[in-house]
Image (cartoon, rainbow, N blue to C red; front, side, top):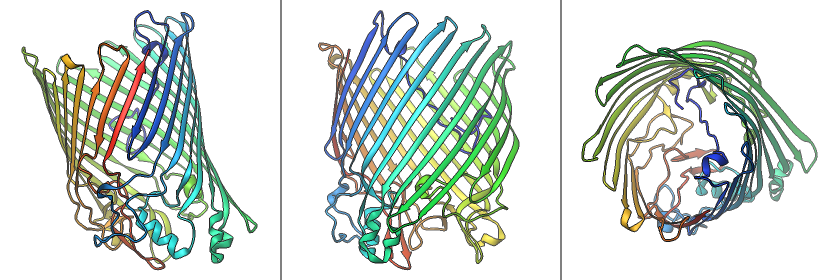
Length: 569
């Protein structure tokens, strides 16, 4: 869900997901159903998923899900890991280390139909990810090797990540005009990492420790809609508390501890006003109060933000939309993985990020009498973030989180879709650029872009369904252009240019009519074994005063032949 609505707070919108209920999965007069699914990838690992669901009575249903993934270390495209000069890196065999591990995820969900207009759902999820992982998972193998070899410490570290989530959802159709959805949740994630390997180098014996951390999120969300004549009101509130704790118990004695917490309260009202058959106006207002107690600052940040959008049906099939939404976001607490604020610097003068997001879009859709479906559209956007917070701001007297300037992000996305018979295609082109207007004390960052900025991207998706063979064929292509070197935030210091790449994925999906419930998929990811690193990950070459040149490139998997089989009953 994007930023162009007061229903969602923050700068980048929110992601909301909800698992299906048993009633939604059962077909016809069925009361019990399930699915078994297994997958294998020769450059990925194996996966087994089991799902069962049932209506135990007219008003009570249950769903259970279990997923097990055995993830392997993968080989990069071309089978060789090279340095910035294109030479093979000593001690590598083309396989990226530090990824192999076991993951399990289980979900149990109960549903009660309390009345025709009321439903209650209770869910519990347990997740576990365990393996010997890299100390710096955001950096490539070349960097990990350079650091571990220089320090004489292990490359891999025993790590366990767990998460437990408890959720309660209540739905009420209050009347023909009003519906209410209430959600309450608690999510607790825990990190345990054995860092006793530091003791393999006598100079770092005091760093050897068992590290544990906890992040707990507790929240309530109330969302309601009321339809009154030409008005559709969306209103509600959300309150989320974030609590983190970190503890390092050193084998040589001593303990480091840190904790932070934040609470955000948001209240919002949006109205969708149908002026006539062609024009719609969507105003909105939101209030946020964000209370933060962290190493960086202890303060409360609050703001009232507004949004206004308009939609117009220009002609049949052609819709235009323009929108503008004010933005607000307080300073974030630190991640448990980095110490939950233990290593942060106090900054009582830090301010919340504010700004505005503007969008304009055109969308056209046409369906002919012969069944041809054509669609096209373009969206242009401009996002300005005032008082942008940079985690690694530096002056002669300060290093840490601070407001460094105003960041502007502009771009567009263009798409063309065509469907006819068994053919479905979608071609899209996107571009996004960012630029910092830095404050005087951070003049060296003036004109800087976001490190994760990507080059111009073109994607093509082609699907063809052969009904007579019960077969669906798929092919997608992603082409990403180069990004030239330039000033950026938190990027490589020697060379931050990014190489472009083209990746092809193909698959065939067969659902034989003669064997009801069976589905088989055969596919190849990265068909031509491209050697590349995603521009959204660490890239480039940096200089470190102790380790020298570090090649940060975090390479993606090479060719992966995959097979999936499932049976639904």
